[in-house]
Structures are given as C-alpha cells and as structure tokens.
Image (cartoon, rainbow, N blue to C red; front, top):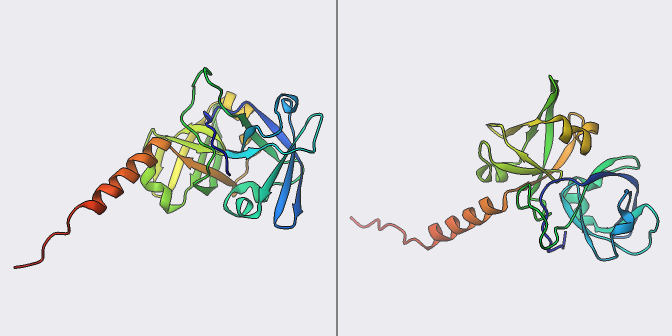
Length: 212
C-alpha cells in the first residue's frame, strides 16, 4: 500500500483472482479483468480498496501485483483465493468527474460482515468495525468497504449498517459476499484530518494546575 493516488470509491468493475502466489517475503496477486490492456506497468489500481501498483509479467486480460506479506496480514487480501471476486478502480485522472468520496486506498483496518439480508430490491449489510475506527464514523457519513463508497445508515455500538442498492449489489463483489467475510475499511479522509488536528490541539493545551 505505497500508492500516492486518489480514488472515489466508485467501483469500475469486478475482477476474478487467478492466483495468489507466495514468493519468499512477498506474494504475487494475479487478477483477470476487462481493462487489463488499459493499465500500464506502474499504474495504480485499487483492489478491494487497497491501492496496488501493476507489476510487469502478465499480458492479455490479466494484471499482476506484488504484495508485501505485511499487506496480506493487515488487509483482507490474504484471504483471496483463485476464483475470488474483487472490486477494481483505477486511480483518478485530472479532470475526472468526482462522484463518491475521497478514498486514498490506504486501508485503516478490517471489519467482518455480521449480517447479510435481502429486503425487497435492496440488501442490508452489517459490518463489525475495529474500535479505533469508531470515532471516525457517524450516521450518514461515508466509509469505504472493500473500496466501495458507502453511506452508513445506522451505527449500533461497533456495528455499521449499510443499505445496498441493486446496481451496487450487481456491480461489486458484494454479490458474492457471505456472513463472516473480512472486508477492508477506510475511514473518510476529512474525518481523519479533523481527528488529527483535534488530537494535536488537545496535546498542546496546558495541563490544569492542581495547586490549592
């Protein structure tokens, strides 16, 4: 996750994992995707919300990415298998329309799907989040889930509820989701900046005197 690009959280398409091969202290992820021919070596692609750089070595309809073992450990990518469905989004270009929210492709933590239910045309998806992300999330705020820009419909303790429209369901990896599945989470960039500024301000405040 060494990219410096920006994404919107609007998934372009899904890809299918061909293989995840260990190579010493690294691994190579190979993905079949319709836009492989439009991605040059060194270009950035968000794979399930994790910003990766295309490596040399694959042609045709496949993309290859070299991953550090740390990336596999701190994201959901380590659980990928041949046939897994992944969300793909190429980095924004200058002048592109902006329709989602600011997404950097830097995963803040992983969550777990605790509920998956179809209700009418829509689907309800509940995700249990790590406690360190809770201060950065609000009702009706944005959260990237496996690279998908979603709106939090409700917060109940450490569980966020999302309502998924038919379009999002059909055009992302959510259509292959299952209860207990691990997902990558990235909090809103503006929320993280505000939290950092507030922490710095509180740290700079003088300690109240305890003298009588």
